[in-house]
Image 1 (cartoon, rainbow, N blue to C red):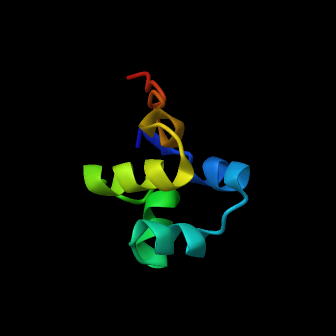
Image 2: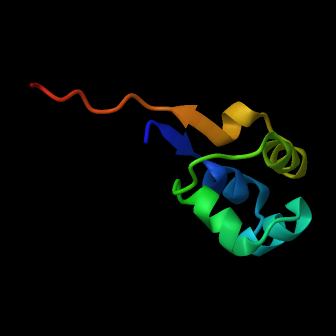
Length: 73
């Protein structure tokens, strides 16, 4: 998927655990892991806003677009 998730980067910068972030955001650690590992198909704006509030960052600090590899055909 061309959307990369950089929650790990922000967790490291904030010296925060996944469990602490999940608790403060109000989601399960399992759901946070799905998002963090790039396996989520979608993210609610309310969840994104909560992540940004807790991590004191902008959405662009957590999500970025990467072009898919071009396939010669």
